[in-house]
Length: 357
Image 1 (cartoon, rainbow, N blue to C red):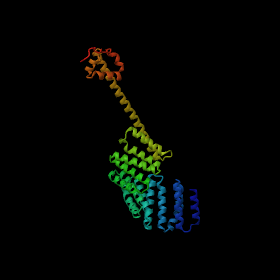
Image 2: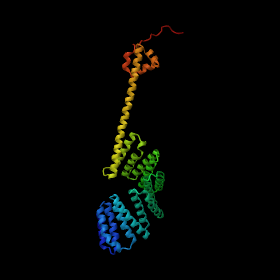
Image 3: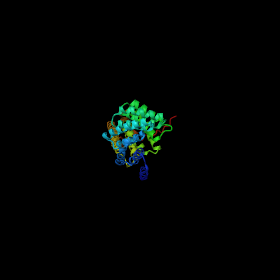
Image 4: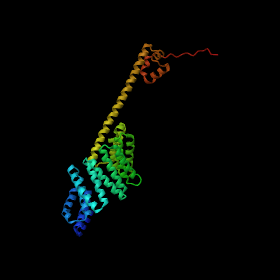
Protein backbone atom coordinates (compact mmCIF):
# COMPACT_ATOMS: atom_id res chain seq x y z
CA UNK A 1 0.00 0.00 0.00
CA UNK A 2 2.87 2.38 0.77
CA UNK A 3 4.22 1.82 -2.73
CA UNK A 4 0.82 2.75 -4.19
CA UNK A 5 0.75 5.93 -2.09
CA UNK A 6 4.18 6.90 -3.41
CA UNK A 7 3.01 6.31 -6.97
CA UNK A 8 -0.07 8.52 -6.50
CA UNK A 9 2.00 11.30 -4.88
CA UNK A 10 4.40 11.21 -7.81
CA UNK A 11 1.53 11.27 -10.31
CA UNK A 12 -0.06 14.20 -8.47
CA UNK A 13 3.19 16.18 -8.58
CA UNK A 14 3.26 15.87 -12.39
CA UNK A 15 -0.47 16.40 -13.00
CA UNK A 16 -1.73 19.43 -14.89
CA UNK A 17 -5.31 20.64 -15.17
CA UNK A 18 -8.13 20.39 -12.60
CA UNK A 19 -9.68 17.25 -14.17
CA UNK A 20 -6.43 15.24 -14.03
CA UNK A 21 -5.76 16.31 -10.43
CA UNK A 22 -9.33 15.38 -9.45
CA UNK A 23 -8.98 11.93 -11.06
CA UNK A 24 -5.71 11.23 -9.24
CA UNK A 25 -6.96 12.40 -5.84
CA UNK A 26 -10.23 10.48 -6.17
CA UNK A 27 -8.51 7.29 -7.33
CA UNK A 28 -5.93 7.48 -4.56
CA UNK A 29 -8.71 7.09 -2.00
CA UNK A 30 -9.06 3.43 -3.07
CA UNK A 31 -5.76 2.73 -1.28
CA UNK A 32 -7.02 4.26 1.98
CA UNK A 33 -10.45 2.58 1.72
CA UNK A 34 -8.86 -0.84 1.26
CA UNK A 35 -6.73 -0.13 4.36
CA UNK A 36 -9.83 0.93 6.37
CA UNK A 37 -8.38 4.45 6.68
CA UNK A 38 -11.67 6.18 5.97
CA UNK A 39 -10.80 9.46 7.68
CA UNK A 40 -7.69 9.81 5.50
CA UNK A 41 -9.70 8.97 2.37
CA UNK A 42 -12.34 11.56 3.23
CA UNK A 43 -9.64 14.18 3.91
CA UNK A 44 -8.22 13.54 0.42
CA UNK A 45 -11.63 14.15 -1.16
CA UNK A 46 -12.09 17.28 0.92
CA UNK A 47 -8.77 18.43 -0.52
CA UNK A 48 -10.18 17.82 -4.02
CA UNK A 49 -13.55 19.49 -3.38
CA UNK A 50 -12.48 23.02 -4.49
CA UNK A 51 -11.73 21.60 -7.96
CA UNK A 52 -15.32 20.49 -8.61
CA UNK A 53 -16.48 23.81 -10.04
CA UNK A 54 -13.49 23.89 -12.40
CA UNK A 55 -14.01 20.39 -13.83
CA UNK A 56 -16.31 19.63 -16.77
CA UNK A 57 -15.35 15.94 -17.10
CA UNK A 58 -18.59 14.21 -16.04
CA UNK A 59 -16.87 10.86 -15.48
CA UNK A 60 -14.32 12.44 -13.12
CA UNK A 61 -17.09 14.18 -11.19
CA UNK A 62 -19.06 10.94 -10.99
CA UNK A 63 -16.03 9.05 -9.72
CA UNK A 64 -15.45 11.67 -7.00
CA UNK A 65 -19.02 11.29 -5.71
CA UNK A 66 -18.91 7.50 -6.01
CA UNK A 67 -15.78 7.31 -3.84
CA UNK A 68 -17.28 9.70 -1.32
CA UNK A 69 -20.35 7.43 -1.09
CA UNK A 70 -18.13 4.37 -0.58
CA UNK A 71 -16.34 6.08 2.31
CA UNK A 72 -19.55 7.25 4.00
CA UNK A 73 -21.19 3.84 3.62
CA UNK A 74 -18.50 1.88 5.45
CA UNK A 75 -18.95 3.14 9.03
CA UNK A 76 -22.69 2.50 8.73
CA UNK A 77 -25.39 4.31 10.68
CA UNK A 78 -28.51 5.94 9.27
CA UNK A 79 -26.98 9.40 8.83
CA UNK A 80 -23.90 8.13 6.97
CA UNK A 81 -26.00 5.88 4.75
CA UNK A 82 -28.35 8.74 3.86
CA UNK A 83 -25.35 10.91 2.93
CA UNK A 84 -23.89 8.05 0.88
CA UNK A 85 -27.20 7.76 -0.97
CA UNK A 86 -27.06 11.47 -1.86
CA UNK A 87 -23.48 11.13 -3.16
CA UNK A 88 -24.48 8.08 -5.23
CA UNK A 89 -27.39 10.00 -6.71
CA UNK A 90 -24.98 12.70 -7.89
CA UNK A 91 -22.53 10.07 -9.17
CA UNK A 92 -25.27 8.28 -11.11
CA UNK A 93 -26.37 11.50 -12.83
CA UNK A 94 -22.79 12.34 -13.86
CA UNK A 95 -22.06 8.82 -15.16
CA UNK A 96 -25.30 8.78 -17.15
CA UNK A 97 -24.34 12.07 -18.81
CA UNK A 98 -20.85 10.72 -19.47
CA UNK A 99 -22.41 7.52 -20.91
CA UNK A 100 -20.15 5.52 -18.61
CA UNK A 101 -22.40 2.44 -18.32
CA UNK A 102 -20.22 0.33 -16.02
CA UNK A 103 -19.79 2.97 -13.32
CA UNK A 104 -23.46 3.92 -13.73
CA UNK A 105 -24.51 0.29 -13.15
CA UNK A 106 -22.18 -0.04 -10.17
CA UNK A 107 -23.57 3.06 -8.49
CA UNK A 108 -27.18 2.04 -9.12
CA UNK A 109 -26.52 -1.38 -7.57
CA UNK A 110 -24.81 0.26 -4.55
CA UNK A 111 -27.77 2.63 -4.12
CA UNK A 112 -30.14 -0.36 -4.07
CA UNK A 113 -28.05 -2.07 -1.39
CA UNK A 114 -27.88 1.10 0.74
CA UNK A 115 -31.67 1.44 0.56
CA UNK A 116 -31.95 -2.17 1.77
CA UNK A 117 -29.66 -1.35 4.70
CA UNK A 118 -31.95 1.58 5.52
CA UNK A 119 -34.94 -0.74 5.45
CA UNK A 120 -36.35 0.95 2.33
CA UNK A 121 -36.45 -2.30 0.38
CA UNK A 122 -39.30 -1.41 -1.97
CA UNK A 123 -37.39 1.67 -3.17
CA UNK A 124 -34.36 -0.47 -4.04
CA UNK A 125 -36.17 -2.23 -6.91
CA UNK A 126 -35.85 0.57 -9.48
CA UNK A 127 -32.12 0.91 -8.78
CA UNK A 128 -31.57 -2.84 -9.16
CA UNK A 129 -33.59 -2.79 -12.40
CA UNK A 130 -31.40 -0.02 -13.87
CA UNK A 131 -28.19 -1.71 -12.74
CA UNK A 132 -29.18 -5.10 -14.15
CA UNK A 133 -30.25 -3.63 -17.50
CA UNK A 134 -26.91 -1.84 -17.85
CA UNK A 135 -24.87 -4.94 -16.98
CA UNK A 136 -26.87 -7.09 -19.43
CA UNK A 137 -26.35 -4.44 -22.11
CA UNK A 138 -22.59 -4.72 -21.54
CA UNK A 139 -22.70 -8.53 -21.55
CA UNK A 140 -21.56 -8.74 -17.92
CA UNK A 141 -23.50 -11.77 -16.71
CA UNK A 142 -21.67 -12.11 -13.38
CA UNK A 143 -22.50 -8.56 -12.32
CA UNK A 144 -26.11 -8.95 -13.47
CA UNK A 145 -26.33 -12.12 -11.36
CA UNK A 146 -25.00 -10.20 -8.35
CA UNK A 147 -27.80 -7.69 -8.83
CA UNK A 148 -30.32 -10.56 -8.95
CA UNK A 149 -28.89 -11.83 -5.66
CA UNK A 150 -29.14 -8.36 -4.08
CA UNK A 151 -32.71 -8.06 -5.33
CA UNK A 152 -33.52 -11.47 -3.81
CA UNK A 153 -32.22 -10.34 -0.43
CA UNK A 154 -34.37 -7.21 -0.64
CA UNK A 155 -37.41 -9.37 -1.45
CA UNK A 156 -36.65 -11.61 1.54
CA UNK A 157 -36.62 -8.53 3.77
CA UNK A 158 -40.07 -7.66 2.35
CA UNK A 159 -41.22 -11.26 3.03
CA UNK A 160 -41.82 -11.85 -0.69
CA UNK A 161 -40.26 -15.29 -0.47
CA UNK A 162 -41.57 -16.80 -3.71
CA UNK A 163 -40.18 -13.93 -5.81
CA UNK A 164 -36.98 -13.95 -3.75
CA UNK A 165 -36.41 -17.65 -4.47
CA UNK A 166 -36.96 -17.05 -8.20
CA UNK A 167 -34.50 -14.14 -8.27
CA UNK A 168 -31.85 -16.08 -6.30
CA UNK A 169 -32.37 -19.12 -8.54
CA UNK A 170 -31.83 -16.91 -11.60
CA UNK A 171 -28.59 -15.59 -10.08
CA UNK A 172 -27.33 -19.07 -9.24
CA UNK A 173 -28.27 -20.43 -12.68
CA UNK A 174 -26.37 -17.63 -14.42
CA UNK A 175 -23.26 -18.32 -12.31
CA UNK A 176 -23.52 -22.12 -12.47
CA UNK A 177 -21.27 -22.82 -15.45
CA UNK A 178 -18.61 -20.16 -15.90
CA UNK A 179 -19.37 -17.64 -13.18
CA UNK A 180 -17.38 -16.68 -10.09
CA UNK A 181 -17.80 -19.62 -7.69
CA UNK A 182 -17.80 -17.47 -4.55
CA UNK A 183 -20.66 -15.45 -6.08
CA UNK A 184 -22.43 -18.73 -6.85
CA UNK A 185 -22.08 -19.79 -3.21
CA UNK A 186 -23.57 -16.47 -2.08
CA UNK A 187 -26.50 -16.78 -4.51
CA UNK A 188 -27.18 -20.35 -3.33
CA UNK A 189 -27.12 -19.11 0.27
CA UNK A 190 -29.78 -16.52 -0.60
CA UNK A 191 -31.85 -19.15 -2.37
CA UNK A 192 -31.54 -21.46 0.64
CA UNK A 193 -32.82 -18.73 2.96
CA UNK A 194 -35.82 -18.10 0.68
CA UNK A 195 -36.60 -21.83 0.56
CA UNK A 196 -36.39 -22.07 4.36
CA UNK A 197 -38.75 -19.12 4.79
CA UNK A 198 -41.18 -20.92 2.47
CA UNK A 199 -41.04 -23.95 4.81
CA UNK A 200 -39.18 -26.10 2.27
CA UNK A 201 -36.57 -27.12 4.81
CA UNK A 202 -35.20 -30.20 3.09
CA UNK A 203 -34.55 -28.30 -0.16
CA UNK A 204 -33.14 -25.38 1.84
CA UNK A 205 -30.73 -27.61 3.74
CA UNK A 206 -29.50 -29.28 0.55
CA UNK A 207 -29.00 -25.92 -1.18
CA UNK A 208 -27.15 -24.38 1.78
CA UNK A 209 -24.87 -27.40 2.23
CA UNK A 210 -24.01 -27.23 -1.47
CA UNK A 211 -23.22 -23.53 -1.01
CA UNK A 212 -20.74 -24.36 1.79
CA UNK A 213 -19.02 -26.93 -0.41
CA UNK A 214 -18.71 -24.54 -3.36
CA UNK A 215 -17.41 -21.73 -1.13
CA UNK A 216 -14.78 -24.00 0.39
CA UNK A 217 -13.73 -25.36 -3.01
CA UNK A 218 -13.30 -21.75 -4.19
CA UNK A 219 -10.98 -21.08 -1.23
CA UNK A 220 -13.57 -18.93 0.56
CA UNK A 221 -13.34 -20.80 3.87
CA UNK A 222 -14.75 -17.96 5.97
CA UNK A 223 -17.71 -17.60 3.60
CA UNK A 224 -18.36 -21.32 4.08
CA UNK A 225 -18.34 -20.75 7.85
CA UNK A 226 -20.88 -17.94 7.53
CA UNK A 227 -23.15 -20.16 5.42
CA UNK A 228 -22.98 -22.85 8.12
CA UNK A 229 -24.26 -20.16 10.53
CA UNK A 230 -27.07 -19.45 8.06
CA UNK A 231 -28.01 -23.15 8.23
CA UNK A 232 -28.29 -22.88 12.01
CA UNK A 233 -30.37 -19.72 11.77
CA UNK A 234 -32.75 -20.81 9.03
CA UNK A 235 -33.10 -24.60 9.26
CA UNK A 236 -32.69 -25.27 12.99
CA UNK A 237 -36.24 -26.60 13.39
CA UNK A 238 -35.43 -29.28 10.79
CA UNK A 239 -32.21 -30.43 12.51
CA UNK A 240 -31.64 -32.89 15.33
CA UNK A 241 -29.72 -31.70 18.45
CA UNK A 242 -26.70 -33.68 17.28
CA UNK A 243 -26.78 -32.08 13.81
CA UNK A 244 -27.03 -28.61 15.35
CA UNK A 245 -23.89 -29.23 17.43
CA UNK A 246 -22.03 -30.62 14.42
CA UNK A 247 -22.97 -27.68 12.15
CA UNK A 248 -21.93 -25.19 14.83
CA UNK A 249 -18.51 -26.86 15.01
CA UNK A 250 -18.22 -26.66 11.21
CA UNK A 251 -18.93 -22.90 11.38
CA UNK A 252 -16.61 -22.24 14.30
CA UNK A 253 -13.73 -24.17 12.70
CA UNK A 254 -13.89 -22.09 9.52
CA UNK A 255 -14.50 -18.57 10.79
CA UNK A 256 -11.16 -18.19 12.59
CA UNK A 257 -10.27 -15.57 15.16
CA UNK A 258 -10.50 -12.18 13.40
CA UNK A 259 -14.25 -11.75 13.06
CA UNK A 260 -16.32 -8.66 12.39
CA UNK A 261 -19.02 -7.71 14.87
CA UNK A 262 -21.84 -9.28 12.84
CA UNK A 263 -20.06 -12.64 12.51
CA UNK A 264 -19.13 -12.64 16.21
CA UNK A 265 -22.76 -11.99 17.19
CA UNK A 266 -24.01 -14.75 14.89
CA UNK A 267 -21.40 -17.23 16.12
CA UNK A 268 -22.31 -16.56 19.76
CA UNK A 269 -25.97 -17.07 18.93
CA UNK A 270 -25.06 -20.36 17.26
CA UNK A 271 -23.08 -21.41 20.33
CA UNK A 272 -26.06 -20.74 22.59
CA UNK A 273 -28.29 -22.78 20.27
CA UNK A 274 -25.80 -25.68 20.22
CA UNK A 275 -25.45 -25.67 24.03
CA UNK A 276 -29.22 -25.59 24.52
CA UNK A 277 -29.71 -28.51 22.14
CA UNK A 278 -26.89 -30.49 23.76
CA UNK A 279 -28.68 -30.08 27.11
CA UNK A 280 -31.96 -31.16 25.47
CA UNK A 281 -30.29 -34.25 24.00
CA UNK A 282 -28.86 -35.19 27.40
CA UNK A 283 -32.24 -34.64 29.02
CA UNK A 284 -33.88 -36.88 26.42
CA UNK A 285 -31.29 -39.60 27.02
CA UNK A 286 -31.82 -39.34 30.78
CA UNK A 287 -35.57 -39.56 30.33
CA UNK A 288 -35.15 -42.55 28.03
CA UNK A 289 -32.89 -44.29 30.56
CA UNK A 290 -35.34 -43.60 33.38
CA UNK A 291 -38.23 -45.03 31.33
CA UNK A 292 -36.31 -48.20 30.50
CA UNK A 293 -35.35 -48.60 34.15
CA UNK A 294 -38.96 -48.18 35.25
CA UNK A 295 -40.07 -50.87 32.78
CA UNK A 296 -37.29 -53.18 34.02
CA UNK A 297 -38.31 -52.65 37.65
CA UNK A 298 -42.00 -53.22 36.95
CA UNK A 299 -41.23 -56.42 35.05
CA UNK A 300 -39.22 -57.66 38.04
CA UNK A 301 -42.09 -56.88 40.44
CA UNK A 302 -44.65 -58.73 38.30
CA UNK A 303 -42.45 -61.83 37.98
CA UNK A 304 -41.70 -61.84 41.74
CA UNK A 305 -45.42 -61.59 42.56
CA UNK A 306 -46.25 -64.45 40.15
CA UNK A 307 -43.51 -66.67 41.62
CA UNK A 308 -44.73 -65.97 45.14
CA UNK A 309 -48.32 -66.81 44.13
CA UNK A 310 -47.09 -70.04 42.45
CA UNK A 311 -44.92 -70.99 45.45
CA UNK A 312 -41.82 -70.70 43.29
CA UNK A 313 -43.10 -72.79 40.41
CA UNK A 314 -41.88 -71.31 37.17
CA UNK A 315 -44.42 -73.32 35.21
CA UNK A 316 -47.38 -71.96 37.17
CA UNK A 317 -45.88 -68.42 37.29
CA UNK A 318 -45.50 -68.50 33.51
CA UNK A 319 -49.16 -69.53 33.21
CA UNK A 320 -50.20 -66.59 35.48
CA UNK A 321 -48.16 -64.14 33.37
CA UNK A 322 -49.30 -65.54 30.03
CA UNK A 323 -45.77 -66.67 29.10
CA UNK A 324 -44.24 -69.98 28.15
CA UNK A 325 -42.08 -71.83 30.65
CA UNK A 326 -39.02 -71.40 28.46
CA UNK A 327 -39.78 -67.69 27.92
CA UNK A 328 -40.03 -66.93 31.63
CA UNK A 329 -36.85 -68.93 32.33
CA UNK A 330 -35.00 -66.89 29.72
CA UNK A 331 -36.20 -63.57 31.20
CA UNK A 332 -35.19 -64.58 34.74
CA UNK A 333 -31.79 -65.93 33.69
CA UNK A 334 -30.88 -62.94 31.51
CA UNK A 335 -32.68 -59.90 32.96
CA UNK A 336 -33.56 -60.72 36.57
CA UNK A 337 -30.95 -63.07 37.99
CA UNK A 338 -31.74 -61.77 41.48
CA UNK A 339 -35.07 -63.68 41.22
CA UNK A 340 -33.38 -67.06 40.84
CA UNK A 341 -33.65 -67.47 44.61
CA UNK A 342 -37.43 -66.95 44.45
CA UNK A 343 -38.10 -69.89 42.20
CA UNK A 344 -38.42 -73.46 43.38
CA UNK A 345 -35.33 -75.66 43.01
CA UNK A 346 -34.94 -77.05 39.55
CA UNK A 347 -35.88 -80.73 39.46
CA UNK A 348 -33.90 -82.90 37.11
CA UNK A 349 -36.28 -85.17 35.32
CA UNK A 350 -35.23 -88.82 35.13
CA UNK A 351 -35.17 -90.47 31.77
CA UNK A 352 -37.40 -93.49 31.31
CA UNK A 353 -35.55 -96.82 31.09
CA UNK A 354 -38.39 -98.26 29.05
CA UNK A 355 -37.60 -97.96 25.41
CA UNK A 356 -40.39 -96.94 23.12
CA UNK A 357 -41.00 -99.36 20.31
